[in-house]
Length: 322
Image (cartoon, rainbow, N blue to C red):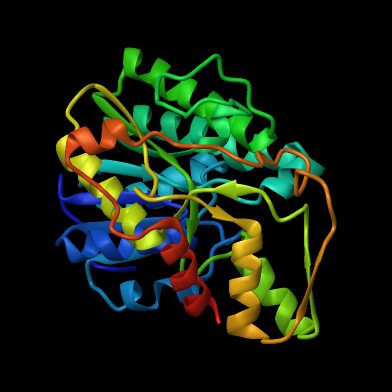
C-alpha cells in the first residue's frame, strides 16, 4: 500500500490505466496533486502508468467501480481518513463497435459505472465530478453541434449510455453534488491508444503489410484531437468554468479529417506501398456517425483553443502508435 493521502489535494481518476485516463493522471501529478487511480483492466494497461507508479503521490487500485462495496472499502482504506477533492470519471466502454454487437457492454461499462461512481460519491461526501462524455450523444444532426443542440437521439448504445449518464449527473446535482463538469470529447488520438481507426490501421498493417482494409467508403469526416490537448482542455475547463453544471464541447480549432486521409497517412508511415481496400458504404459500422461538425465557440469564449489542426493531430498520433 502506498503512503496515505491527504485532504482536498487528492483527486480520484476512474479508468486511470486507460488511454485518456493515464494521460490525465500524468497531468494531475504534474500539477502537484495526489491521485488515486481506479481501473479493472478491461481496456486499461498497467504499462500506461509506468511513470505515475514511480511517483509517491500516486496509488493504483485494481478495482471495478461496479463492485461497489469492495471498491468503497479499498478507497476508504487508502484514504486513511482523508477525502477526495474531485472525481474524474473516465471509466467506460470506449469501443463503440463492441457496444453495437452487445448492448450489455455499454449498460455495464458506460452507464452503470457512472451510476456507481455517483453512489460512491454520495456515500462518502465527495461533491465535485468531472465527467468524460462524447459527441456520440448528439446522434446524426446535420447542423453544427453546440452544447444546446437538440433534440438528442443517439444512434449508438455508447452514445445513449453516455447521455443517460449526463442525466444521472444532472439529477445528482439536485441531491448532493456541489459542482459538475461535463466534457464532450471528439475523436481522440495519440499514444497509448487502445482502440480507434489509427490503432486499428497500424495493427492491420503489421499483420498484413500488403493491404489495408478500411470499413466504409473512406469519406467519413470527423474532428480529431490529440490526447495531450484534450487533457489540457479538461484541466482548463475545470479551472475556469465555475457554474454548478458546466458542459463543454472539446475539439480542434481547425478542420476535420477523413478516414481516407488517415488510411493513406498510416500506410505512408507503417507500410509504404500497401494497397487500401474500402468495404463501401457511408457508415463504418452500426452506430457510426459518418460526419459531424463541432462548435467550440463556448470553449473559445472561456479562453482555450487547440494548437493542432485535426490532420496534424492524426499525423502525430500515427507516429506515436508505430
